[in-house]
Image 1 (cartoon, rainbow, N blue to C red):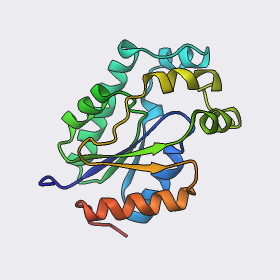
Image 2: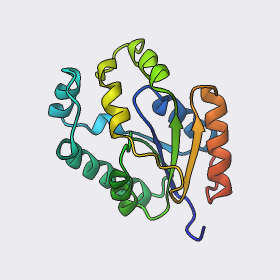
Image 3: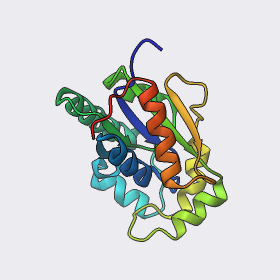
Length: 177
């Protein structure tokens, strides 16, 4: 792997633990967290809140905003950790275009575990009814360059963050305490 991993995307379906794992990685590494959900336009949030899945057109502007935020963070000398479902390879390639050293941590879990977690998650706009559409859209990143897959069903947030941080350090991160 010639290009060091300078930024991470914590990816997976709703309920896999992206936000919690990202926060824990940032604590361990001194990286900067970017919560991808905060970049959704109001129309996307309204659509998802109503139980309507987003399509490629809905996600296009959102992905452009995430690319711009990755570029901004990298230009500022930060090590960004972005939470983003990144369900399709084309979405991941779009994000990679913003950061040639982008790595992905794929938090895998079963449909049942995801649905249970989302159903019991307070204060989030994503209803459990959209879990099936997330799994239908998901194109596994396993085998793609700079990608680490972790089992989010059986490991704690701390274990996942520790494994991801170790992997990131092995692939180019210089931790900031």
